[in-house]
Amino acid sequence: MSSTPFDLIRQKTILFLTTTEYSHAPSISDPYSEPANIASLPVQNKALAETLALGGADVRFSSWKFPAAASTRATLCRFDIILFLCCDGYVQHIEGFLRFLDQTLIPLQEALPRLRIVNDPRVVRWNAANEYLRELQDAQFRVCRTKFLQQAGCGLEGFKRAVQEFVAGGGKTPVVLKPSVGASENSLHLVRDPTAFTKEDLERMEAMLGLPGTVGSVMIQEFQATVKTVGEYSLVYVGDMFSHAAVKRPEAGGAERRVNSQYGGGTVEIGEEDLPNGATEVGERLCEWLRKKFGEGSVGYMRLDGVLAEDDGGFVINEVGLIEPEVWLAKDQQRVERFLKCLLEEGRPQAA
Image 1 (spheres, one colour):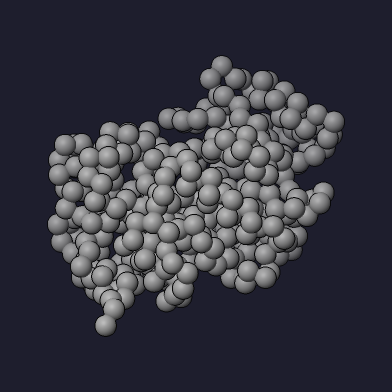
Image 2: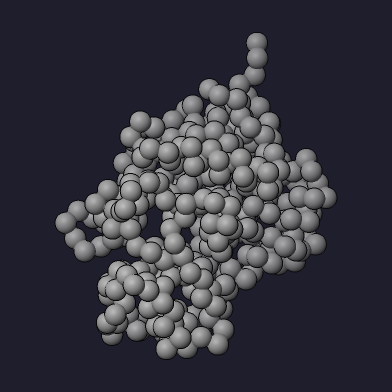
């Protein structure tokens, strides 16, 4: 009788990296034997961790903010699989997070190939700052038109000028401003009329230029009004295969354009047939591009977010989530098994 993915995962010790240590959590040396404890953690994708624990896996949690690299490596070597899916809030500690990747996790992965880190820490390093959009743009992916403005030496007047140059002949065309490293829905700002900045516009721009500990640049990005009328599509890939999709919409009838739940937005799962024409083809091409860039099996999960272009209705990439996006895996047994195959086989899962 052949083994199922759940039979094999019971033999594995899985570490979910978090950003914050929680007072009610057991130490890294203790198994998280009670799935109810997992449900109480304020992290994304905990339903997946809970499902794995219920399936018999030895599931543990710990912050990536270990005290010393040498002792950290010794601790991490004890695990079979390390996941970033519950690593919310890393952007608030981005410099430390990048050091952890550069000094600990990437060297550990190179020294210990049997350790399965998903996604590959090199992929996570690449995805941690939105400058990756520029690379995708250069690779001929259709990405929301974006200008990256370096903060060093750029005052408010330079910021205003850059915004106005970005819209050029577009006049009152709205633009979105946000840091290249950050939780974009929390820190973005919509400039409705670049020809007449409001007091709020100027205050938010000054704040973006003066954020303490900021890494990266400020993004000036075109605004697609279809995010309010149609929503933002999310395509989830496991390995390099399309798994499922959802559409996120802002609160109906309001001025809010952000789609996250904390701003009143809602998420509805949809079928592949409800996706825009060409969306899955973009995802497949992106999976292939990432595989060529980082190697086979380097990407275990991906969420591709995009909107419809106002001019021709084409699918435009907003964001690629390869660190801790909500992926709704635990809602369906087939999705979980597909993901487990990816973890266990260290490569492309077979079609279900």
